[in-house]
Image (cartoon, rainbow, N blue to C red):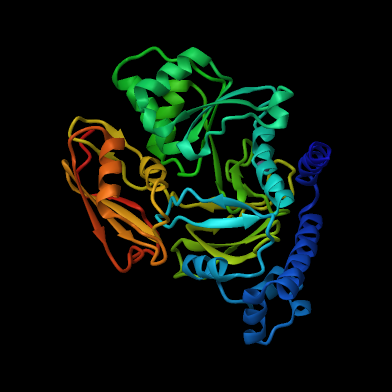
Length: 419
Ligand SMILES: [Zn+2]
């Protein structure tokens, strides 16, 4: 029974965080060895890679051994998944928000997907949020489910969702109407909402907890949220293909890595520069995710946890808090607005939004060669979603390079911020 299994896994997740660092490392290595063995036996993409490096599955015993395998880029991953004959038929597909401008789809076994969903609950419990808390979520329309999940029908994690396209006025109305315990959303949207409330001196209900996901908050956004809602932003770093990767600890003040469910490596970089985050998802048996360059930057922390948890700490660079687009009317669009809008199209390989001047937005798109992409339709849809007169130029390009610092940035504004 799925419900009982999930409840058991949840209990284990809550207990395991208090194991010692050594015990957690041993658990991580056992899970990694099992995943590598599975990859070699059941996935021709990884079997070929291991063979090419002259490495057998038995040679990868520690996370240091893992560095003997090559990094998988987003492009390689996309092609490998598209071409793979090894993906179980019953897989469920998770699509990423594409917050670095590179949307992806990953297959998961139902069991793995339910574990990934659970990893988000660990930080919520760490911040004292009870399962009976009522949540108001600002999210992409693709995430809004018509029917509730089994645990929601039992009264746990009850959630009301509102679309990111609705805009600040409607988000505020939903907040006032539902008076939730938890306000949950992309950090960029929460920041826009806080600014809107302040600027217009609107009364606003103060939820007890405010949780930001996906695009990481900058200091200014974090401060605005604290001023308006009188509570600090609880920052969670994660992705659809990985679940919750790391989360701000109320005691340590840095991010705990969910190291029993994934391996976070930091690729070498110039001294002092942030490093690329490489991810190995230990619950990725439908198509293994091993040493995957997720497009974010971070640093390992030098501090030992002060809270008693064995989960290691890391620091994140505000990799996804890209520019905010300021429309001629003064309205602001967070990067997540475009991530949700780009979901409408048949899977561009990569995209980037560049605002050159107030009334003009350039959208560069690398279309997927195997699917029809109609630039005029894309332009019309984005114009409709923005709902005010702005010139939208869609440019079909062959490639979009990373920025000079190695960051994959999806939204860039060259318009001076005059807030
Ligand atoms: Zn801690």
